[in-house]
Length: 406
Image (cartoon, rainbow, N blue to C red; front, side, top):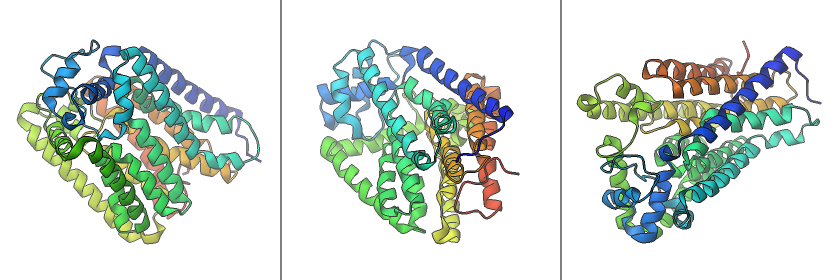
């Protein structure tokens, strides 16, 4: 029987989650059509359909096809680049033949289904818990209403596939099905730099996860090369390198919620672009090295709790990250709440409150001037990080029990 919570805590919980839902709905419905990143998906589909897959990552061809799209609000000399692996290309090509509005509607429906599946996977353990009260509804709803989820849908990004892969990775890892967990993690290859940082530590502990990841990544690599050819694969590498400098591209480095964004906001971009990029990549490499050290130290005791810290640090240190990618921070508190409910713990709501609070801070970050950007970001980081750090201090390696404890 699920333990109930007192009325005061119940009211706070409902109010915070309701605020999340309202803000998320407003963000999706009011986002300017001509500023959506969905432009890159349509561009990729048009290039594939009209010019062929082999030139998919040619910036000149991308820019020409992008300028043909009526919703383009950028200058004619600036490209919002498609720099993702071509995993979804067979789906993007027919979408590019539709009107922009029709294509975006279908894309949003598919993305919503993937996010709902991710939420369902993360909270599946609650289905065996007796009772049908608010608890079983609030946790997945808080996951779906986390502000970066709304940005995924509002922008028309492909991050939902990343979320699905990470959900499977964490749940399968917790079940001890390491090869399958690694295979699920390979779906995160839609963001290669994220997937790489998350997988490397498993080369040093619970190696079957890494083996599963490599197997899945190889399948996706061969699949991608079969679509775009070796020239297209080389073009992707070149496009990713160009993305790192941002020359002639629309990257939005000053709005990145990571170290690279912080350096861009607080330096003169034209003078320090190379320096900030170098520092960002070096910091990310150091973070991965520290994660490897932690995995070596923990050995077989590495758990989903450790992966929570890995997800947190990945967003902060990996170069080229945006607000929609911060959605991966929803996993630690949601998995924690699910575990607590399954264990019939009365404090199951604390992780949900942490997630809702972080969501509100990220909302403030998105609408605040640069002067306050990092303040709200730091506040969100603390709400996600402090419970995980407490958990480490207590030496609790098998669950997410640090959330909301003192």
